[in-house]
Image (cartoon, rainbow, N blue to C red; front, side):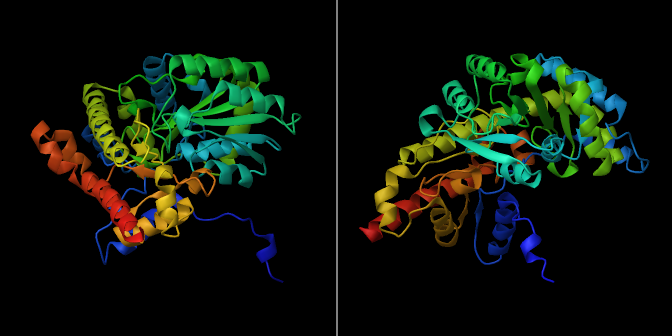
Length: 421
């Protein structure tokens, strides 16, 4: 009997695929790797040393996470975000990605609401959990943000109001690089509270707000906000796979036991040496604090420069406020690109990769309509270790691969249009 008809329609993550394809192409040509969003910065030396010292730790730790780590995580977020994180409501998982899925998997039925554009894995995760997925289309005018008006209208017109509604909100945003102000969060919180929406607030890039001004939604909607974070972005430790989740007090009795059930039947516990080492990161001593501040300075300066290059070329790009992403819109070049038989973001990114050696992810990967000519650009293809210690006059050389990649985009666009004219 063939099993094909019974397999889920789930594919390889597009962010991982573009990374693998870039590696394959690099054997024959130079590739500007703007497709994969991995921090370029090394793990702080004091944190890495903690891992080395605990390399022999091999015992299983509690499913919820090692208690000293949960205490450190809660204290860290109370200090950084001015929110009421408590260690008994913290769950340590193998990356925030799986923690988000664990929340979804805790429900038998739900409706998951996403903003387009939003991170590539939210929708596949919701579908794996068996949930209905709905989307709200943001636009360049709002710098790709969800507005209270959009949310309120959707909630009033829901087709399945009997299902719990779970909004996944990510900011600073992947792919947009933009974030929400305090006033914007408060306005969203008013609508969320009115409609009783449960929120997974994915704040994995919060510590990389370029001005250090991240505000957690949990400050304004504490009763309905689950916050996720982790070490992958601000601590450069993506491969360590350590994420954190905080459950609000109002949901702790009902939801936390289910989350622990999912965790116990799937990952059991996060790797012990990583948990021990993570305490040093979340202690946020002077070395780690200085490291984070330097990252912010580098990413802010480079992000502003990169967006400026694209905007000057007529590629509309919101200025980044956090993280290391841009979401350029090639819509102003639509007619010219059509003469090149480019009508979709997939076609645009394919041609940029094969003809210019520039790897971007198409807007469709983030839930955008095919005809909207957007793409995600991750400006991290530089030596992060060198950048951390470079003097001001040395940074140009360190970040040159990013500048060269931007020039390749602009050159390809201008030259291809001339040839098609």
